[in-house]
Length: 612
Image 1 (tube, rainbow, N blue to C red):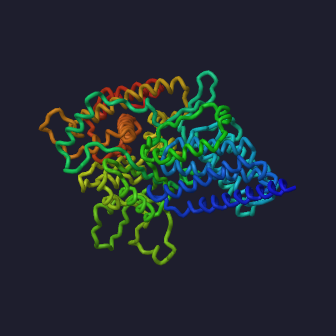
Image 2: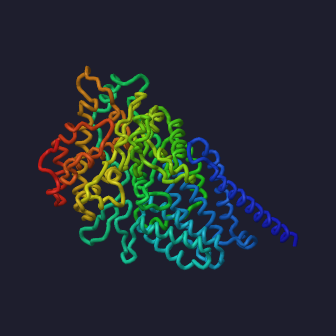
């Protein structure tokens, strides 16, 4: 009898300890929302404490499952909620650190929830709160699978999610029902999923479909950076570049910089988006990441979805070291930020940049041209008079203010707005119809500053091909697929794709040689040759920036040779400008482009000789 009472007391202690851990974990998790999204130093201690609490909670429920099932009436959806929160923690670790391995861990927990049917009976509870948790879990799982390029998982999840939303409408309020219908619609439009087809057509990650030459089924390709993405620098070139830069640089300017942080901004109302991630933003995220170590077979991935406490503990302990040695630059993803939000992120990122590190600012947004006002006698500053790009379309509530003809868009980023941040090395990419406004950024502080700008316009014959994603971003993401789109090709065989990939590699190699040999850019074999701007070469030491610069050069040369792009308005620009004689006038570069056109059967779309 006494032994039974002792057991009962012990069981109550187990339940009490579980309730305390559960409540503490919820409070800590909710506190994550109050942490600023910007900055790398404030969030780490709080995240570590939250992760440690969830580690204890996960281990505790595993070790005391029988007692909790009997005395606490622990339900499967509650276990699923804990696993979902751990998956969210891993995903937020990814957002904060850009370490793609954390995506793998988030996938493991999310996949376990689905394979073990933790949320299976949620609809029977007849609770809208529980159903909303299930819907949010699906949306988060889809985002993780998108980022990992697990397309079959995405297809299965979208199909299942759509079915769940339709079947459980009676439980939700009318406003909630409409909201989740819109979420499903956004996902399908983002992926362009055809209900009648087993495969995903022209997804956001693949502008062109690659079909198996034998079975005609769609093939998946990985477009993140890999060992084969970037041509190797020739021996001896790096030291020669650094010595030449050193001769002509300002005091204190780094001869070689690495990409530290990237701010990715998206505001394209006509562009599809999902979970505050536009197509262009999604593509740039992958441009700035190395390919994660993932399992290709969905069955094997499902078998591996067995998260354990030891695995959580291991990754928690390693997180500090991983933050110090990142494989990928840290990224801020800003969807339609206000001017003040973007300025705060810029200021914080520049402030926290370590020495010899650069900031990348990517702007995908529609432009705002100069506001002409004949009654105004004021002369505008050169950094504002050409307009800029609009990051948020929010309007002022005061109608009287809106009617003032002199009022400019409050959330328009002008070139002069960026001047203070050029105190640190900076690469700016503007994919907008008013990108040309940024073509004369002054180098006020002697630091390397490069701006890559999209064409002002596109030929009518090719506009439709880039309706899903902007042209410059497409070239930076996949130069081969973007090349095909300029030629009106939206699908090809895997064999032809492989052949063309080898030609693109040759073209990028030639682009690299053009950068390194160009006297205008700054490399000369004469020690008496001094160049005023070595920005391109100072960035060449970073693999991500070098790949972006090479793909930009490929885009520039391709469009200069393309017959449809026969106006300067259709060409991308850079500041400092690429010398035509070294790029467009490079016979080997032009030959690679023409060879690829021959392989694809579109030779007639390109000029017969150099346009330079």
